[in-house]
Image (cartoon, rainbow, N blue to C red):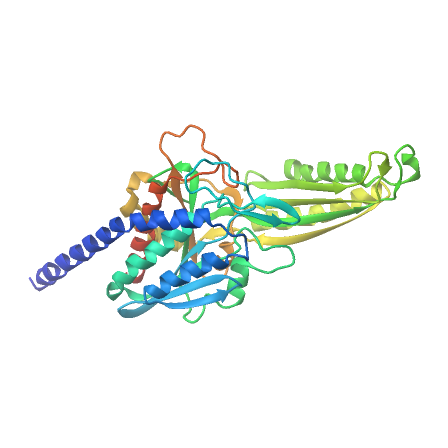
Length: 422
């Protein structure tokens, strides 16, 4: 009888609280869309998100949060303390855009132009980071209204330079971690999401363990001997050597990497060599990326690429040096934490709309947060249902359906309540 009485007293309060939260989420959609359109029209490149950061900080300050700016150059953090002490949860959104010229006919299309690596280009939120900012700003507003019902603290992390800092600069999640973003107060768990142009609105996809690949940027400098194009025997051709190195790299994937364990990719995306049609140049440069989903395979591929580049160049009379830069570790979802928050995602999206997926060879520097504290990263549907050929991320025609964002707010809000109040 005593237990029944307690349940009777507590249950109506919980239902009222949940209803109030749901109402506030529904009412914030207009602001959510307005914010997204603003950021889409005013994109800024990595480590240059000055106006973006100002608008975020202004919003968080207006909510009465403790706000920190200038973290990892342009990052912003808002801290919300709940009604009772408890664990610390972090929610993260990336805020940078890409050097892509938008080709959409949207009324809020980006017309911003800039010079990137000595090339004039447009600037576009061609990966959906504008939606991530808006979703986290909306989540902050909703949770602030109900902070008395939270047992713990929420850190809202707005991270710059997810797409990678400019050459010669530090940035992104790695620099945020280095500067202590997961401390004071110390974060117990972190969560992030990414909208997906190829997944229907209303859908959430996830995976336990490795969900996104590690990302290595590599540069191969090949040295030959310059000579006249009519007399190749008088020199050493670095272009020929480069071709052999590229061919050799692909045999690592096709003949040495155990692809039944995990996927792996080696891509050369840029080759620079020569100045004239009838001159064999002195040098060539190859730039590319390696993607892996298994730490052992990552080690194998890097070792073999280093050996192969040097050996092939020497076999043809030249020299080669390869340098790797780790841009992201494997985005690895903690198994226990994933199982813990899965019911929260199913509650807001419906069990049938929360789907287990295979890993992707795309990369995310959210992984650097996960190397320090347990974390979960999931995908949010942003494709208008019925779309036959959605445009991929990082393309001029990329687009997201605004109606997909509200589920992101619901997911962040629900998992925060459930994680802190367990």
